[in-house]
Amino acid sequence: MVLTLCGPPASGKGTQARLLGEQLDAPTLSTGRLIREQQRLGTAIGQLADRHLADGGLLPDLPTQQLLADWLDHGGHRRVVLDGFPRNVAQAGWLDRASTDRGLPPAIAVWLRVPDDVLIERTRRRWTCFHCGHSAVGPIENDPPLTCANCGAAMERRNDDQVAVLEKRLQAWHAAAPALQDHYRQDRRLIEIDADCDPDAVHRGIVAALGARDREAGSADASDPTSRRPGGDEPLPPAAPADGSRG
Image 1: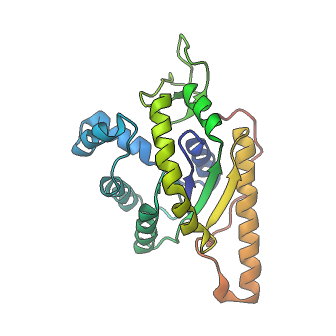
Image 2: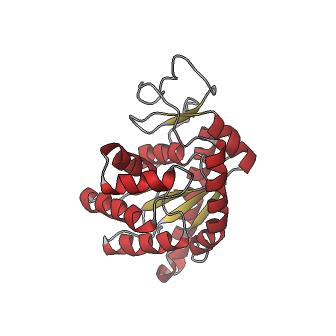
């Protein structure tokens, strides 16, 4: 099973990827975290990212795909949850081919819908843990810094969490989103979720939608084994009770 969390910046992809990874006992991969690590190490890809990301741009497709391919090749995982990839239809096509080459089914896209004004407010108040990748909404200024509810480390404000940068990224997202959405919709690999609510409620919605998808696919298999839908090869484990503490 390959799940990918798709949505605009600050839509909650990282939080939902973490919750799904815990439930599926699957590794989660944030391309953003991979890229920031390259920047921290000062690699060639990191230096390229510095030039593109500073003013709201994105790392080009080829080096982003190289990072993801290296991660997939060293993991050998049968279940994977992706956060922030693909961002356009060209990347989605590459991911389909890369998954098939590694014996994995085509990805199911979980599409998080959040209004732009909510995204802007979230970005203005977003704090990030650079130790585990968890993010949370808090005061714009906070001294001492917020503590990560996931691992206990001190949280920081990301340099790119600025409204001007977000607005540029939203423009790029809205330009690429329709074709990306159609790519997954055309063979019924798209699950759309209202993500303008509490993270646990979003998670329950995703789990319910995936469960319904599995049941529908199972019914189709019973009547016609050739009708199995792409990406639906494994049932989702039961959801753990939400504790309301996740951010």
